[in-house]
Image 1 (tube, one colour):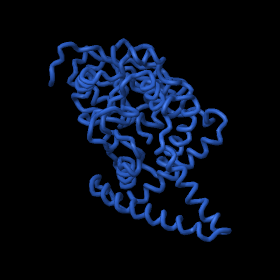
Image 2 (tube, rainbow, N blue to C red):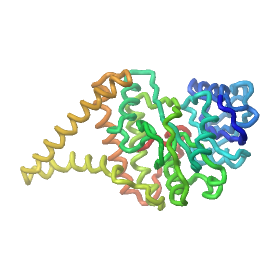
Image 3 (cartoon, helix red, strand yellow):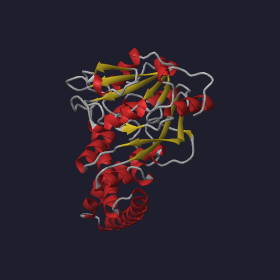
Image 4 (cartoon, rainbow, N blue to C red):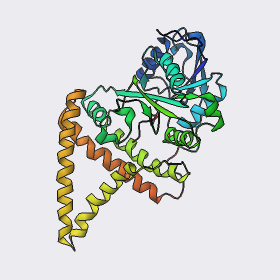
Length: 343
C-alpha cells in the first residue's frame, strides 16, 4: 500500500434503500479499505421505511445512518454532505464494490491532477444471461456513446465522474447537488464544476465493480428516464450539458418511424430508411459479437440490446421535449439511477 505523507479525512456518502446482498458487498468492500479506518467515515442516507439495521454495518467502520424521507438520490447525497467532516466526499453507489486501495488511489489521483472530481472505470458484473447482455451493451461505445467511464482506457478530462471523489470546498461552493432532480443529478453537478473552471478527471487505472439492471423492463425504464431527464437538466441551464451525441438516439427514432410514413406519399424515402437500417443492423451485429466475447454473454442478446437502449433513450428524450417543467413521476427511489451511467 502506498503511504501518504498526509492522510486527509474522507467522508463516504452512501445513499441506500434498505438491505440487499449488493449493499452487503458494498459495505464489506468499504470495511476492506487499506486507507486507515480512523481517517474516513461512512454516512448512510437510507430511503427505506425502516432504517438500516446498524448490525449490518461491518465491524471497524465509523458509520452513521440517516433517514432520507424524500427518497431522492440528490437529497440523500446532500443530506450526508451536511453532516460530513471530511476534506473530500467519496460518493459510493450501493450497487458497487470498491477495490481495497480505492480511497488511497483516489487521494493520489486528486493530488496528481488537482481535479475537483475524480471518477473511475466501471466494470459491470451481472448474474443472469439478460443481465450479462445488458452489461455488455451498456459498456460498449455503441451503447453509451462518449461515456468514457464505461470503455475508455486513457485518463484525462471527462464530462462526468463515477462514483465521484469530490473536493469538499468545490462541493460547498457549488451548493451540492440540485435537489429538484430525480435523475442525472451527477451529470448536472459536473457540468457546473466544469463551468466554474474545475477539472473533472477520469482515472481508468482504478476500476469499480457495478451491478447493472438484470431485466429488460428495468433497462427500458432506466434509459427512458435518462433521456427524459437529459432534457429537463438542460432546461435548468447546465452549461455545455447537451452534446451532439445526446441527440442521435432521438433522431434515429424519428427517422425509423417517420421515413416509412413519408414513403406513403414519396416512395424514395424508403431508400435511406433501408440503407440506414442495414448499416445499423450490421454494426449492431458486429459490435454485439465483439462485446459478447469480451463479457461472456450471448451475442444475439447483446445485439438485441442496442436498438432497445437507443429507442428507450430516444423516446425519453422526445418525451422530455414535451414537458413544461421537471418530469412529474412521483418520488424516485434512491438507487434508481447510477451516478455516471447515463450516456
